[in-house]
Length: 299
Image (cartoon, rainbow, N blue to C red; front, side, top):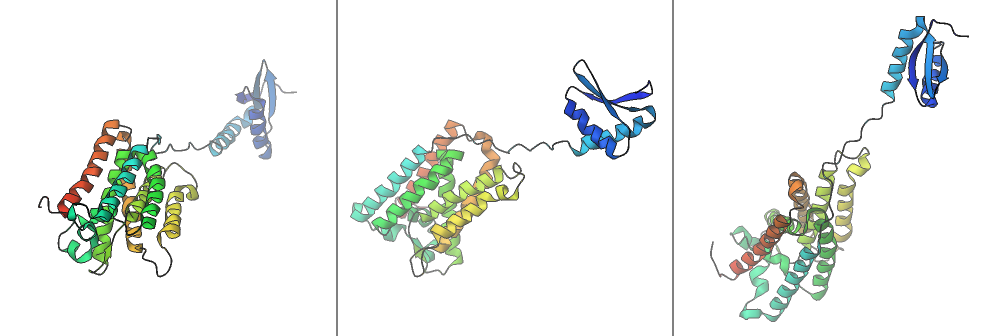
């Protein structure tokens, strides 16, 4: 039986808490017992072992404290991506129809396609106008399908207006880089650069916003791996095809960079006015590029 020389070194309302610490002390040959009274449980040990027992219990508690999980840098709020998708489909379809009809007696393909020599000579607008041109119905429908998919994802996390403004800007830079790094005679058309820019925005934003929020590397780098896998699967085409691999790659890279940059303004993304202004700006860039392509204004 214990006498007055036994001292309480730990107490808790849950018996298991005391039992866990009792096992620790017993493993170190420190005599200890549990006494219970009125719903409370106490771990007691002889007075001569009190300091050592308290130290070992403290050590145990430090080793078993659950590390708090860091909070995500951004809590995504699902946003309405339908307006951006609708405008995207409308623009590429209208331009396809106008180009096919040779509307206003103009050669839309010659005026708007990517042409390495002309872009290097200063015709910057071609990096944007080419995004709305397509060589066939199959080409158009493919870009509409993937554009809806990736545009939906991008719009859902950063908003319709901001996502498409980022996509248009990133696509323009991608076409410019593709032109600079390829031979000067390079020519291309199609919204696929924008499609992969949209994929890049999703991957870049998701990775950067949640970089410190996950404790497993597979989760941290999942968006990057997934984006590259989709790029390889849908963006390289078959041997001998007319797939513009460079435009797809630069589209993804520029979109990825844009997505990371958008995390810096993530707190403003739910603002409806910002989304509207950004959406208007995205459309304005395309309209401005086409009016410049047809010589309606000079700069």
